[in-house]
Image (cartoon, rainbow, N blue to C red; front, side, top):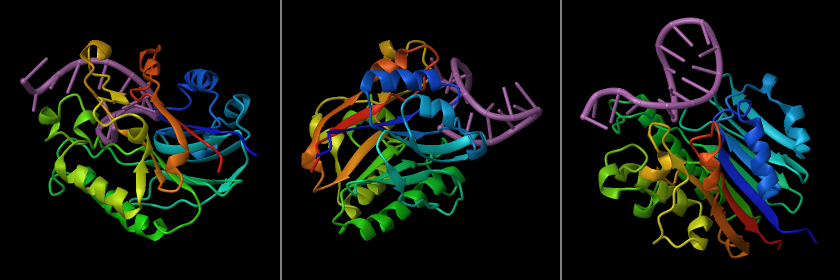
Length: 268
DNA sequence: ATGGTGGTAAGACCA
């Protein structure tokens, strides 16, 4: 039987700039599958040889020149499981892969949404809300699937009060506004998704995966948000054996502003 | 406090 699967999701904020840091993440976690967001590289320039040198022979990627971009790096065989556009904008924010046991992994980069949390004043926020509505509609179509499914990525929303450094001070800050939190709850309900990171780590405990670059001392201030998520279907959730945020990576030299998030999944 | 920092790519734009 296959071994336990170690799955990592990470908004790397430029794959080419941080290839060495990816190597360190892979070395320290021995991840089997790595889902990346914000690769910021178009497909013609994807650094396939460097990724292969880290041990990933099976790679799927979609990128835009300088922006967005998602990739799934795997040490086990995978095949493409489709991708599409969300919220009516044709950008590279979704890719999916199917492993040999049938498990499908969806990797998402939800729009950040700009600064003003009003869709009438801010087209980026409007796009984010439409993206979430599309995820809800899609979730209803996969909720009854019998094959195991995983949804990971930078969802750019911190849903719980313990997912932000100050619930009260972030209520009007994009990523933690009530409209976003409610829409993300609808996405989760429609797809019958389990937040397996919070299944392992109590919702009572503060947990962040992102800390702004705009802080004198990000670690001392610790004004983080949990924007990066790993969800599974209900059948798969009991097989999740561990979950963690690699907070150390935020403190490495020239880091991403996001830390990797990791789970282990037992074989069926 | 309406800035602060970082990436892309050579301007603003995005986060």
